Every structure is written in structure tokens, then in C-alpha cells.
Length: 121
Image 1 (tube, rainbow, N blue to C red):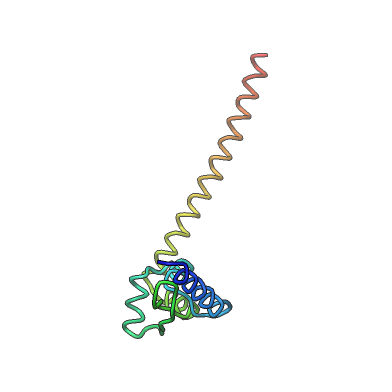
Image 2 (tube, one colour; image 1 turned 45 degrees about the horizontal axis):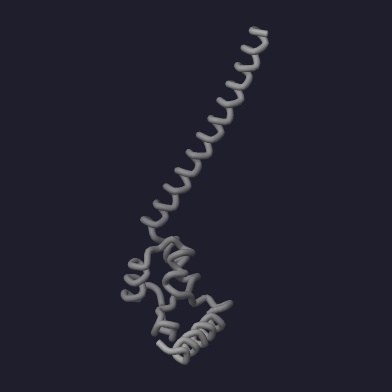
């Protein structure tokens, strides 16, 4: 790849980013990262007509774009994805409860150590 090709690819990438800036249409990678939906699921959804998609020129050839709001709404309607999110929230809640319990135990241990030091000293 020579410098002219690299410059053309860079200009194309800048143009695509400018077009997408403030736009609801995002790449599959970004839609996946922001909604937690796998790229495979996104492909299934646009191929089956559940979400719209379009192709746009990207730095390495055509790129598939999907509307982020539609993907988020479709993900919210998916029972499996909702269960996964609920499970993650439940895990986070349990972790927070365990952290709180450890904090309480550390306070009790510190109080016992102080009490033991006073009886020794």
C-alpha cells in the first residue's frame, strides 16, 4: 500500500466518521459494544428484516451500519438478552452485598483487636 492509498483510506474514514457523528446509524462493532448484542445476533436480525441496515464505504471497504436506537429497542424486547442483563444485575447486587458484609466483618475484627489490646495492656 503506497502513501496515496493510505491517504485515501484515511480521508474515507474521516468522511465516514463525520457522516456518522450525531447519527443514529453505527457500525456493528459499536452497536454490539453499546447494547451487549453479539455481532452474530445483529447479522441475524438485519438479514431476517428485524432491524434495518445499510452499507457505507469504510476505510477497509463496505461497512454494515444499523440504527442504534432500533438495535437497543430490539435488544430490550429479547427475553434472552433481558434475562442475561438481569442475571448480571443480580450478580452485581450479590457482589455489593458481599462487599458490605466484608466491611462489617472488618469493623468487628478491628473492634475485637482493640478490645484484646486493651485487656493485654
